[in-house]
Image 1 (cartoon, one colour):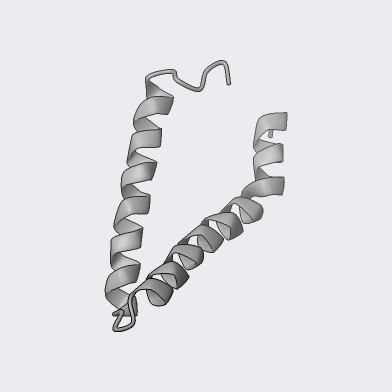
Image 2 (cartoon, rainbow, N blue to C red):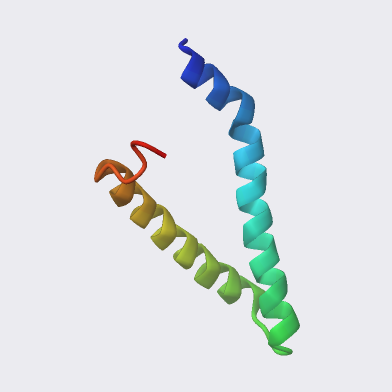
Length: 69
């Protein structure tokens, strides 16, 4: 395993935890701002936005945007 993949393995769980934290933070915002909030529907909407963000990032990575980050 090369250094890059070893580094990824060291940080993978942290990346996952940070992603979950962003999701939960947004869900709390919906709860705070909408008294009659449907948590499950809010969760679906937030996941949809996160999936769109991931798709955009994938496109940008393949287009070379982060090659010299």
